Length: 550
Image (cartoon, rainbow, N blue to C red; front, side):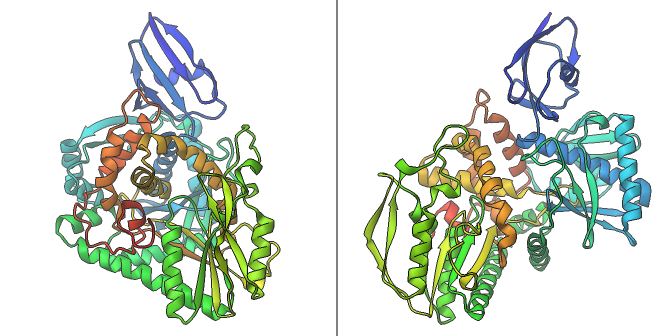
């Protein structure tokens, strides 16, 4: 008799007993999750849902609110999507690009991709899901992958050839179609998520449920600004000759990364200078900068101030954090905890009054928030400005219209910042932007706050919920987008973050996510000498050595 302790999100674990080996997915009929479940963890290690349980163990099932399960869902749908494209259109090239509009933007290299063609692909995908076709998964070692991929001589082969840390991958077969996968996929098509295909610009959106609402596909909302930012990043990476992880690895292995760093930083400086000129031309005097965690908002804001001065303007730099309400006035959230993330944590009335007073030329006593005592302090920043001064304000609520409701719109220039990477693992596997941000945050939290990687990973779901509520809904308010991603940075972050992740042991809840991130980092060759990264680089805000941020 086998005794298995099984848990699903938001429910107490249960002990199930059975007298013969059983596959993990067969347990799904005995437990009920609030949302569809896409991955399983056996004694702390992620396994395929078809894993055979033949001894006492602990089994945890996850829905898409957990990172690995979210990627399993996306990778499984992508696998089916590419398979059906090839059945409908033949052996055409398909590139998986980036996240957009609660889905993935993809490009099919074929003429006349219209709604009729998309309907055929969609219908075929739905038909295969209904037929419940099995996906056979086989783990292949690094050596086996190289042997299998050598005859293809593609970007997947080049990736394995370039990265000695990449230990293996999964070969997944469905009928006559097979492909390499870096995550476990679902074992049957019926376990795949709902989806929709939507023609967009020169590509196709593959949309599916989002962790913020795991049971349904969100209403469609165009993200024009983000699309344009990704297009710009694609142009930059084309200029740099870096499109895939292999391209970056080649630069490092051939010792050509120093020029790559210089050009990448020069592109950032050129963009910041361009934004400064846009602000000057607009005549607006309040610049509002917002973006999710670890976007590099502070470094960007201070570099923008320098470029505004080069353009002949004076600047006053402020952070909305200094306008926090005193801690004893904080409201409580739905969990009964003090709400530090919402706009309720900001003294909007004081902020509005002081911004208008500054614009009117009045002398203002700007507060500084003391995070130790939890109160605003005065007398340290008594300021006034003239009509050639731009107030640069950085904070998570910068684009929320309610923050600046009492300020004339003609004075406001809004900037959204986030690191969006077009760098892909290979043609069919993308790099999630959230992973790049979390790696940045792990490194910075350890260096500046003495926080472990385990603590940062534990906090990340709460951070993401706050972003979904307070930041992402307002990115369309921006006048311009700044992409803070540096194409070389994952190769730099690797040496800092790997040792921190390896300290997380398999008894902790954060172990699974740590292993996922370590596997992700294995795609890249580390840049060991980062001394040539400029001291005003946004990357320095995280790895240290910045002259802009402590």
